[in-house]
Length: 446
Image 1 (cartoon, rainbow, N blue to C red):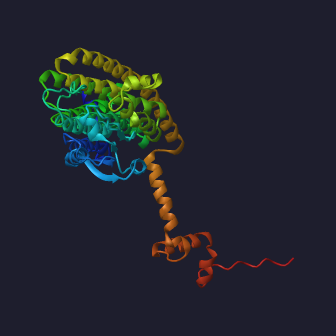
Image 2 (cartoon, rainbow, N blue to C red; image 1 turned 180 degrees about the vertical axis):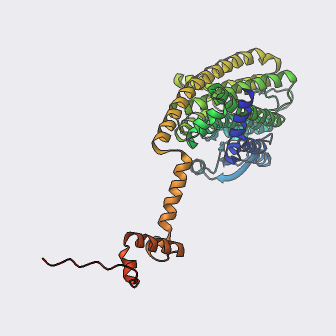
């Protein structure tokens, strides 16, 4: 049994199949490292904004100078009126623009608490939060210098970050994208590996290598895939986590267990898609439709509780949602352990369900494909014989001798011999009669 297991592993994974390793290892790791480097900056810099300056006071000039000197913001346009900045935002040139109202300084000196409107684009929630947060910080810092120590601000705003104390939103988003890449790669990897026998019509050969055991064939195909992608996922996540905060041993074990359960569930789902469809094209299409937009519905960019009920049900069925909850809970420290355990149990139940379903469907599909291959061989012969027959037919069609251009000497002699055997009179007319040959007596006349 163990020999059949290792023979099957060697047949599936060590058959010089570059596309297999590209799908299950090189692409997810390469794209994840690229995303980590892309989101490695701790703050977003140079968010494009505009200014509509309606007041010509000294305070308005100081506010404009503070906005221009801020490293996060980049003033790319100073508009004459409101509509000019609004059109620039529609064209995508601005992320936000600030309106410095009339009599700003006069109202501030009268302690009337002037309001500075900030208009932001609704297309990018993350960039909006950065722009508005930085504009508020600049305005608050400028307003503090207008009052003496004896006069407090009537309203004070203080921002705190729970679970992401450094405010590194890029790293937090990058971790979610990394997990979503491996979420999709695990499904596609299982689709590619399990569709190989159906694609190459080698179900009989694979079962023969596996010792006629469907369980051995399933285990030899599934276990190396899970091991490879889980190790790659852990290594890439540990490399990316350094941009947020270091992990303790307990956090690493919990996150690794969640990642393993996610890989198990996704690989089982991919194998199930192959068992249902029976070919790689349809199974990969289903996997792309389900796993492609998963990151948009898991609550990493938009709050999950604000989504419709149907979307929340769909998000709950995705393994990515629960593994991201585990990762977010581990950012809270020991407080999030209990919540992480609940998500881990849910992922384990998902893994068990998809694995059992895929085993059952693939067993049925392997039996059906094996029967079809046997019927085809009985009707047309073996595959090797068919290939040689096709090669012989093509060679016969391309042979110039069949069209009278050239006949080999041996073929000419064979044709002459066949002609002589069929027509022996031609030889007798060509040679003189021998004297020893008796003459035919004439019949007497009646």
